[in-house]
Image (cartoon, rainbow, N blue to C red; front, side, top):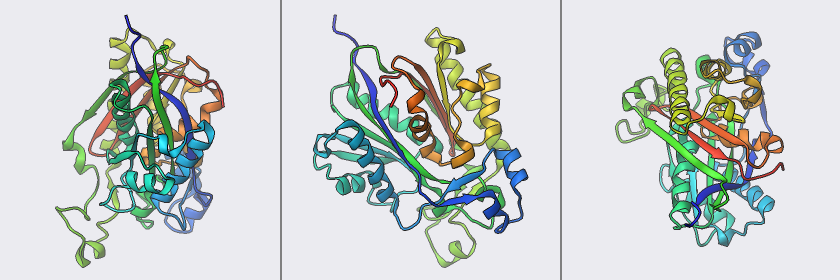
Length: 331
């Protein structure tokens, strides 16, 4: 009997812009203060992309991945880019990144599932590996949220930052890789977290620009409630159907929305915070970038064979979880 083929993460990279927007900087821009931001979000600073496009950042992320893994651009079969802030609505950013790095044999596309984007892209990419359709798949999660944030709106500008990361997926028959996943969506939640204008429903016009309708709008209370419920339920379902408990999980990798959501999810699952990845303080919410940035930041602490549980929740609503066995050993 042939061993089961899984898609394993065989490389991880990340990038955050050098420019820092601190809480003290925001105090000069909107009616807020460091204590108010920190107690409600856990964020001290966030990074802002300057003099680069989203695809420039994506290309830098993948170039770092290739340097670490020895991957040549012509070996890449597929590029999936999870983002809601690509260079343009059309063409997609994944293929633009492929062109910039010289991935002449790759096809690609974008996934726009907001903060769940990387999770959805990771699971999607894994299927191309498992079926044998592709040998090397690059999955990117990144966002330039500063491009769609109103820096006069203190309810959103304190939360979001720019940055992202990527992983390389390859086939593995030794027990490492993605073991199971859950992906969910509920379009009725779109009224609580959205960007109104710029699509076919409300095309860009003088009126939409003047009305500030090209910026993210969020109703925090229902988003908070559904985020905790969505991530807790999907993790609990994955644990149950794989006959696991939280004690079997070495690391939980939650979307970095804010510290209260992260803590609430861990508490509801009775999962220790010391095994819960947290980068919210220094980077804020980078939307599709938070999960790969967590893996990048914690890479040196991870051991081959560690069991990871990734979970995310995003606008739309979208949410889910992914169970995997780590295939790398430190950095």
